[in-house]
Image (cartoon, rainbow, N blue to C red; front, side, top):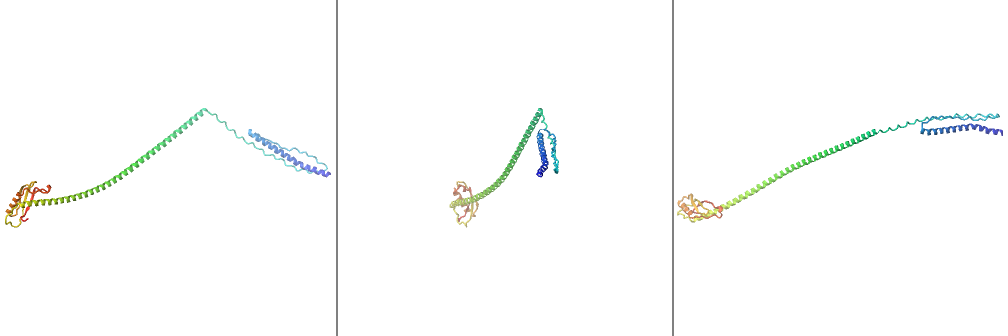
Length: 294
């Protein structure tokens, strides 16, 4: 029984140093936690102060061993390690207080701002005027170019039209000249034909008129006896439009004076002579040829 009682006591004596160490470590952890908490709260309001914590373990109460039995000493616990001291963070300096506004500086700034705005407006207006001027110049240049192009096109069309008109006029002139030449040729041909026909008709009418005159004169001729052959006598007779004979001249003798005289007497006796069918066929002077056997 005595031996059994000693065994639990010895076991309790061996467990007590471990419990004390655990208790010391727990206290140390709590103290460190509280210190950190306090430091963090104070850091928000003012610069942190250095915190010094002393940790120590209270001396353990060791019960004197019983004389009857020697107990092996418990293992010595390592000394607790103090946590590293947290260095306080330097609080950033507070921002400098804003400078007090000077009314004159505000007025100067306002004037400067107004001046800058005025300059900006003037610059914008100048740029706008420059754009408008350039646009006007571009429009004027485009208008002048358009007018120049139109003028050149009009001149080209006019030259082409003049050339076309000249060609057409030349063609028309040539056609007209050909037509006139052809018409003139036809007219001349017709005139010649007409003249020829009229001349032929006039000659025929005059020949017929001369034959009628000669026939009348022959009717008044008393041929001389023993007229040899068939000699020809030519007389030139001058008459009036009414047929009255003004004169009769022997232009070619028949060689038989009795026959020539008989013809002269017959001519004067035949006045007035027969008139032509048409007045335009009348001739004042007639050349009459006579043969006794005609």
